[in-house]
Length: 313
Image (cartoon, rainbow, N blue to C red; front, side):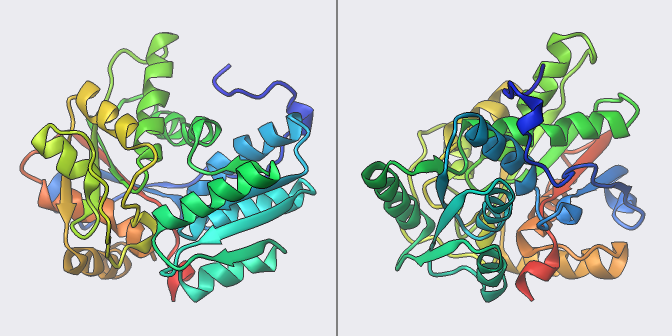
């Protein structure tokens, strides 16, 4: 009932999800009851697989033969993998800052890679133009993907024995995930499975923070024309779901913050050395933000670590 899939017999899946919710030992000394939702064990190494299973399954239901997608790398790898399993053609549009490892991961699934000279926003534009011109099915951080990413919220609740955390801290690129997790808890509350909602906390890199800037200044989102951050997976200067992310922040009575590249890289090291978790740089953003906001957080806190560090060695 929580997903927009009509025919489960057409489901395209690698058994994604079911990722570990790990009780932090080291950082709980600073933050209290802290948990790390480690998405790096998904089939292609990031949380994007949760969206791809729904998005590509829906494409199968609609009789789609070929898809295209703009990506900073992780979504492209996931879409390439799932579309191959579905027997579809696939073309991925990438900005200039995507790591070699992610390009190789996309290519190994047989997808055609189109390198766009510019930012992620430029890649989105090129992909959209290609989709319209060729009538190729457009996938990415759109509605069906968001429906799939709700499973992060469902799992967190289940893994905490139906205790709703006080705060959930998420990295934000396009803003799709933070809204999807918020939406999941609203679904659960609507059907009476939980009786309260968490506060959502969104973290962006200081080098690409259009959502945080809008939230702090109570303004509309203004795109960042020249974003730059070591956390390339969330280097989305014109976030597709920025408005939805702001909605999640406001309605949950949460808040948002930025962290520097130095803070992100240090947290990536700390996660490895103190917790034994090898996180992608963008995945370390949530915990870096939680540490920065430790005086505002209390109770049970969940930080979503979105990807595996093997993606960018």
